[in-house]
Image (tube, rainbow, N blue to C red):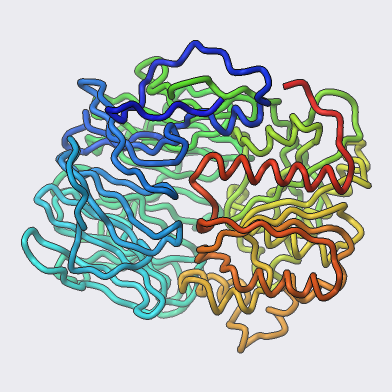
Length: 619
């Protein structure tokens, strides 16, 4: 059933509807149409005022929420949706990023929290890709920008003054934090030329350098990545919370840039860690991630006590500690759609309309691969295998799949397919060495792991070897096209969404920050190491493709630009390879619900036409 349109007041009610959906609407469509809400972000000094993103209108847009009155108001209303929003520390302004048709290139706009006209938030700055935003209580703004002709830059804007540039570099860099008192900022940068390993630099707001944190040889490339989780929320306290990799996984340290003191925190947890501050600066909210599942802890900085916060098994999609000490978090599992919860009790916000139908639980598979044990997550329909199977490959590439709810996975299970998701080498969450294995032989490394899991899926009786689909979006779409050429006997067909298809052309057309990542992954530019680029490009292997190919692409995609996809499709046509292409008016994916449903329908139709219609689960 379609999500209800906003009322005249443009509110998102928090009381669920009791109306039953029409029985003719399949469960997978109801999942896509069900309203969803992101974890609200509140104003630091006015915590009753929050912003969130929701698809309640049928398109993902920004909403304001007054926790005292309960009023919710839609802030943005744009044909292709809005995904990025912030709220000023005093709660007076909502900031949102205005790009054009999903191209990610634009400016920050702002609107009064209580409603009113939108206005350019920083008129003196030209459009760019966003590179971070810092908002201080006194009205000072710090804006990070990335552009293809100017590199990376950071600008300070005092109330009533013109923007002042305090940092600029040709390599990738972004604003990673602004101190509570608005006196210092931290830049995460790749000045050393390795886009997978960042260093940190603290500056005063006049651009004067204060301190650097660099995990590597002096003047050389860093050995380990560093990520800033932000300054202490207490005014005058300039401690920075940092995630480091000095022992081969993500852990937490405190850095005092004014004194140079570093305090590594050994929390005794085996997986990867991230953290955020409690509002009083005396404790940390710790996210512990291991084997595709996550949990939360409170770590007391004075006593060293670590206490687990009671959350169900699954994945924490975001969390924050409120001034009263309660914790709000976004949670889901493979079988349970996302929920917004609070340790203060009960659901935080309930979207309007029908709650999306659940799905099957996720099970784990560990498979011996050429580079070590590969973790895969498996979702199975009712009945006995072997099943037609979709290998749904995640993007990133430095990301991972986990035990979280995914509408597309649930849709394929409803359609009678098993779904296998592989956390190949290069994925996060399995230690630094596993992620760092993704270099030089790009694409081919991941396919070795995917191939090992495919062999297991067939040998175990899970997958029908004649009906295995290779599918993915972004980097997963790239691996799909590459896999169809490199492993032509393994797959019955391919579904590639917003893929890299012609790697060299993609490099020359993509945003500069991704150029830097590609140079890091392949060890140089296409001109410097052409043989590596050729070995990793799907276009190189297009003649070996033996099965039908479906490609969907956004017209305005700055990450996987349309021209390089056109080159690949033109070659498919020249060779007489069966294929279908769907283009839509958006960027790297769509924020419009009906567009997502349309794409899922077309994938179903394409797969059914190639390998036959499987027996569906009852919806």
